[in-house]
Image (cartoon, rainbow, N blue to C red; front, side):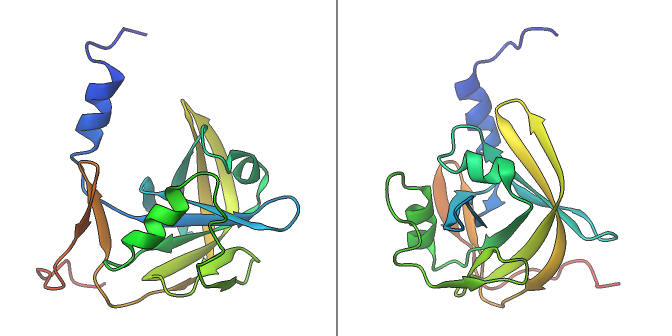
Length: 170
């Protein structure tokens, strides 16, 4: 493989120019305790079957739980939830101590006040570079109406509630 003509700092900066949503990915560890982390590497994969994808960094304090899980939830954060994103990106704290959550159909924790969530059973686990990719089969979901929380260039972005008309539903 050819050596890249840029360093990882440049690559991270270039990736950071892509506006993403902000999610909290949750599961349970081997003892059954809830665990989770903030993630912006999330995307839809397929409508039929219903699949989503999330990337977990190998350096995450939750990596062991995500390596072993067969269920997880992706919680989409609303524009007013920068505090939740910050709590779930912190190390050495009980991330669920102040966050209201409940159990989804699969048993994965879901954040009750988030914009929306996907409750997933593991479809496929892929190791790619310095990340673990989880592809989940969506078992259940919930959607909300308030504006989403965005992330771009290392900062949270609150998106205006007025959105241009998108593609028509089919």
